[in-house]
Image 1 (cartoon, one colour):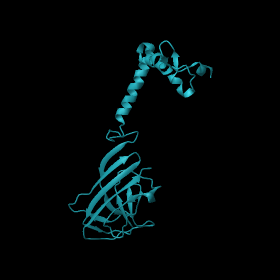
Image 2 (cartoon, helix red, strand yellow):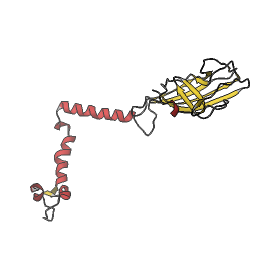
Image 3 (cartoon, rainbow, N blue to C red):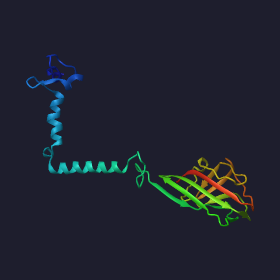
Image 4 (cartoon, rainbow, N blue to C red):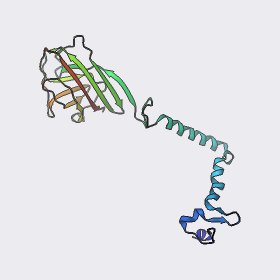
Amino acid sequence: MALIDTFKDRFGRFVYPKTVPKAIIDPDTGESLDKFFDREFYEKIGDPSFLETIDKSTLVSAINELKTKDDLHLAETMQQSGGVHGLEIERGSWSAELSTTNGDGVADYGSYERFGTYVRIGDLVYITFRMNVESFTNCTGYYIITGLPFYSSGSDRYRYIVAPSNLDGATDYASIRGTDIRVRSSPQAIAQAVPFTSTKYIHGSGVYHIG
């Protein structure tokens, strides 16, 4: 407290710690403590001659590196190639195919295009798909939709939400195993594959985890 006790304000009163920066340390000039630091510290840090050459180059390199990282990771836009803040962003397409758990079933797509898109952000993948199937015959087992763009171990498969529409017995529940979507008739059961000969428009979307 001895240092603080030596500080007086412009009226000659002793100051308390919270007012120390405003304390007058030079009665002749009226200079306060914060002004003293501005002059003795901040100005010297801003003066390149205050630093050794190696220190200057290191400081400049560090500043430039920070600027570069900041420029490439603007969270406001999320448009940088390679992602933002370490999250890699990848976009692409994939082709869904109707099959069964027994690997059989003959799907006729006619002239219709099978099309799917994906957006991968880190280990999460958002998918969409559509396929118009004119017929599906000689099928046994359970429905699956194959061709997912990224493999999943299936450890969290019951947490996924993938909603394939217009398949008999299908619900909004689905599970992921490997690169297959397993269409479910309920959270506990896979949907039985049923042959059909009239066109079904099978569309869907969802999110799953790679791992």
